[in-house]
Amino acid sequence: GMMTVFLFARLWRRSGLITDVQFAEMRYSGKPAAFLRGFRAVYLGLLMNCLILGWVTKAMVNIISTAMGVSDAKALAICVFFLMPFTGIYVSLGGLWGVLWTDLFQFVLKMAIVISVAWYGIRAVGGMPQLLAALAARRAAAGPGASDITALLPDFSRGFTSEALWTLPVITFVVHLAVQWWAFWYPGAEPGGGGYIAQRIFSAKDERNGLLSVLWFNLAHYALRPWPWILTALVAVVLYPGLAQPERGYMLVATRQTPHALLGILLAGFMAAFMSTVATQLNWGSSYLVEDFYRRFLKKNGSEAHYVNVSRLATVFLVIAAAAVALQLGSVSAGWKIVLELGAGTGGVYLLRWYWWRVNAWSEISAMMAALVTTLALHSNWLWTAIAGRGQPFSGSDPVVFAKTTLCTTGVTTLVWIGVTLLTPAEPGDTLVKFYRKVRPQITGWQPVAKLAGDEPVTRDLGKNLLCWLLGCVLIYSSLFCIGELCFGRYQAGLLLAIVAIVCGLAISRLMPKPAEWRSN
Image (tube, rainbow, N blue to C red; front, side):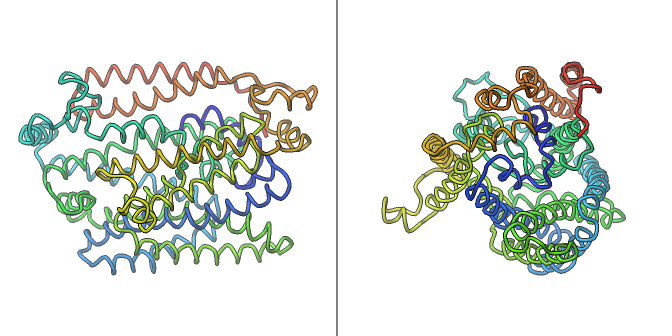
């Protein structure tokens, strides 16, 4: 998120790459670097991408089946044989710029739709005061251990150990707040940037535009986008309690509480949201498979027309694979939980590879392999039945088991990659010097290489960037909570948070380089 904006966006832009997987052969050298590039291309572009596309497709299946009253099988057929092929066509024809323009249009359309759904949903319960009263009544009926579902901050009045304070198990809360943001690889929120975020930074015309694009993404994604969805979810809690599949509550509000004249536009908006995500993932995945695997290792001197055709075939293959994954997923959450577990612990190496010269190709390879092997081992029923006489290593509710699993994977992965880094030699000096001169990372952590580089300009703005990062986090959270407080009618708190957000924004603008100080490349 904000760490990418101020600590990594400019570094990515200076690298001049096409995909972030190419970073491997810029930062590292030799056969390990080549292997890492190919391995990441297949691992992320195929395995992880299909998991992501699978859970997105699963979500769209739920939407279509609820909205149109058809079976899940028919809804999946609509996704696979209509929506995804159409998306694949304009991805293949338009490339990255086509994806960017359609993303912009679909974002505006989607926001208009979800705001409309929230509006009609709140009106269906009588307005915001009535919604809050109904939620309060549900809380009172649940007993003294129930928490306020609309509270933006914890209620410590009943004690630190009160059940009303911990709506999540403590260990799950700690993982989300203190570990997940830096340790887990996750699409769109990769530690240190990467994936389609890096792809958009590369496409910006200069460093300044690259940084501002990521800043806007964080504001739109984390501050603006959530509240229409949250408000509709609260309406669903009141109107449709106790659903066997709570995920369907949103579409019940959307289809039953909005005017019939808007249902077509409503469904089109959700399809636009689905197609926007699919377009991004298909473009991202096919670029990995073609540029970083096929073109790099299988056919280096083909014509551009040949690579375009291969890219189209890769897109078709990803669509088919995503449909197969969607059939196997029991729920939407199952997909993103698998992705989080497979990326647990790898975030540290993705952060430090920019700021510590000692990180080498084996660091990344060992991190990815350790996370994969540990995740598979922890989910191996036969292994734990043989070892402990039960099918899984951890006990507890689903959130607790998930937190314990990811903490274990993070610990093992981190120990493995740090150990491998210290036990294997550093990259050759000429490779490190070339990278240092091109990207100009912070001299902190690169001093031995800076000496080899000679009279190259030294970058010493780490302290200012860290301050901007902290201010940016406060900006995002204060903006997010400001919108929530205003929606709930708590205007004094909303105004105070708005002032905090404005002050943070002004402070960031003062700390950022002046226009003449930006590099234009």
